[in-house]
Length: 312
Ligand code: SF4
Ligand code: SF4
Ligand code: SF4
Image 1 (cartoon, rainbow, N blue to C red):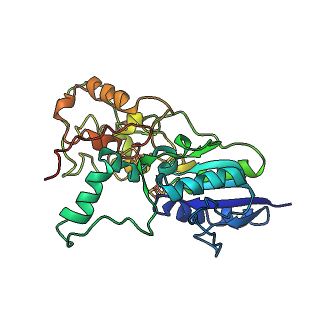
Image 2: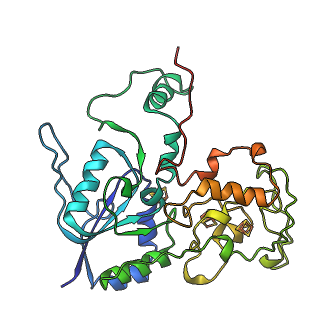
Image 3: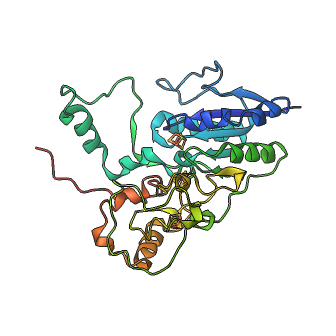
């Protein structure tokens, strides 16, 4: 009997599903062991959403449920709950589902601010009233999956590396849960650290990092020690898959932006990062944009809401 799989996309970009397809041959090899019973991105599997008086969404039962995207509105909450009820194992697929991801940046603002900006003060469009019919009502903020339903496994990444997806699928099909490394991007980074703690001020990434193209990556000085805001110290490793290569952005000599989320669930990523900065001699008051440091981890109340002046 093939293992049945259902997949749903909530508040996300479907990049995680594209990464699933990018597992290529690995995915094709799995096709005789799995049966996809529901995956709106790949197949025509309609469900009937909630209507007045009913909160039911019709999704087929399955052994494994992959959910990408975070939870932002009432319909997505119902979808997540239905998936939980119909699937034996629930996997938070990608950083949006695991930690809120980019959609959770909105947690810096409340819904009033959001509607005012989108519908009344945006420079490129005419002012309009906020939508209140047909579209599902918003929740008060964006939630990671495990804030609303029980989650059995997490595959972080924006998107996750295809190797990690193929590995996770393999384990899940055999009835085991995928494992995530408790290692940071720094642990996997070959850049040279001198540990002198002399940065003082973070620079915006407007100019390339200093490195010599003809020399191996291990000869490049750590980007954070060069004064570039690299979130590697507090970001979970794994973005280069099984290749054993350096983290993907570091390969391109670009600072890590934290797309794999925190190293440990339940820790305080902001505090950890401020400590990492302080140990490099960086005065955190001079950070160009302190809140964007956690741009991928904005659920779990990690982003403090910005206080706005009352609207005129
Ligand atoms: S984790 Fe990244 S790739 Fe996946 S849905 Fe969210 S934004 Fe898209
Ligand atoms: S801070 Fe960035 S550049 Fe430095 S070791 Fe960590 S991941 Fe590499
Ligand atoms: S280096 Fe950081 S931002 Fe870049 S892919 Fe890896 S985890 Fe994501």
